[in-house]
Image (cartoon, rainbow, N blue to C red):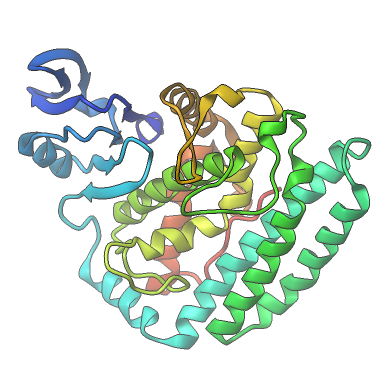
Length: 343
């Protein structure tokens, strides 16, 4: 369990990673600054342009250690992986279902059901815990709208209409997201979700959290033998881990969004942690990313009871358990995919 939670983040833009025996070495100007034993790592995420040696890439691939490359600002670039972790029969089943509209919709609607269910739970928790500090009628109206969408999602058989219901639910959820932010700082006002690029501090936090969650989901899918690039809700696009984006949908509200709200409401980030760009984008500074990643690692170690399995596990294991359940459903061991329903 602990190994699955241990991810090494390289934040300095000029660090070069190499293999030193059974260690990953961080180098600057030809000098080794630090070494980390490979056997303790589940993943490496580097935000450096300097790159990594072929020997280290090979060692990571052989040991099934995810090695992801991102820009210094957090945009995903590439991932190094080894041989397939699963069998060809599982992936053939995945591809057949992805090519079948009815089969794809069956898996997608479970994931969208989980997303809207968890979004409603997050809004309802804010209404219950902070009734005197929020616009209670707005939150209650959003909860009712999200609740009304759930049976529609469960009954939907057309992929395009399912995406439409997801869009309606997301609009209702982000329409009251500002009420979930209790930090009074003007810099943390939220009006609308903006993606590429994020146009305010809250969107910068959300985008960074989603980037990290997508990488965790891609690694989880690879670990059970599924192809993270072939999705059911998100269709094929070169270079996009569509199935990882599918898997993370139900985890956005309860893992990524709640984490961002914790950072904001507990004042774990400050306005100085963000840098406005000439393009209008707002990005995390180096110090801001360090604070974010430290808290993200701690969040993944917190425990919960899995709603389907009934077992206690760290939050960082949730993508791996959901990937495993998805693989079992695709193999025919489960009648349907059980989404993660946060309680």
